[in-house]
Length: 421
Ligand code: ADP
Image (cartoon, rainbow, N blue to C red):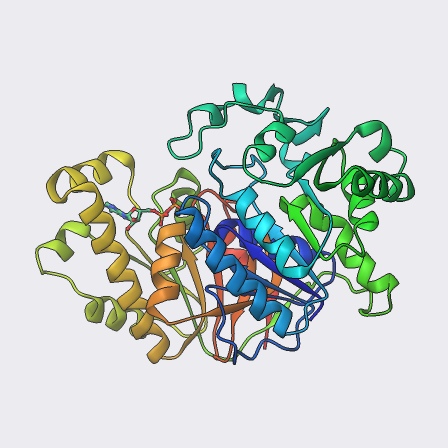
């Protein structure tokens, strides 16, 4: 294992895992702090998905250090602390305190900090983070319910969160490439700085800082900073250059789709699936609440469908229907009820021989993964940007977990083409 990554939330972990996979690293995403005895070898990178973005600082630090210990014990040569590309944090943390604790744990004297991700319109210039065309503090992030970002100057933002000195490397230096950036690292060390914010407005800048950071024990940033890291390990002869996987071998078995997302994108994908002749079962949330429908009945329907193609079970409904259900049951109760139903249905489907499963909806995916007791996912080929096939570690099961808004209209129809027997 070469790169050990700690992400402060689940979707951030997936972003990073996909980025590393695209660059040819065999990547495993783990859902919780792995036990010291966990079998995680055979991968170039392991990404631990924590949920520490807004939890109490002490808890975030403790979980991050536990993760670091597990990754280092597995042989990680470098640690990557991944946070959001909008630097979601408060003056108390959690980015600063976690980064500082990790730097101490790896015995490092300098770490970089850069949330830039130009593809997603996150750029850093003169130390100020821009979201699209506006500074962070003028973006919608200024009103975020948990981490309102009211200062765009990341040097100031990070300095309020750490005891150590925070420095800055401007675009004029970053633009000159890895050598100039390495020199700037030496100057930062000489000034007693332990963290440096780096400007970056293009992918080339991210690759440059990644290259310069080859020997730093800790890197912190958004997933963009990972662009330049895999090549470092190839140059050191620790990894072979590889292309991103185009297909994934999957166990023979039945195919199913579970959709609990009510997003426009998912509803469009359901429409396209129906048009393509995929058999569908519409799950009525009120019937579940009334005790008139249960997971066993839905699974029985699925078992009767042809095994040569997928079948689709969905609760997805348009906003008026969802509102009526929520008015009757309560918003959270309705959500929890439907999520539990999907978790139960998924368990039954897998028992009945489903080995290839697509789940639509972030919360729905979380419930299904928990229900199935899945703790680690190996990242495979991307079906559409941001949605890869994954293999559940130690199980005869591949899954595509789709955040509601993701994927082209034909997602449910074409996804299977990336699987081979
Ligand atoms: P997305 O990724 O689109 O946000 P999620 O799965 O995260 O999708 O969230 C959708 C939520 O809506 C889940 O809690 C799900 O249980 C709930 N839900 C799904 N179908 C219905 C429905 N028909 N009525 C009410 N709530 C629903």
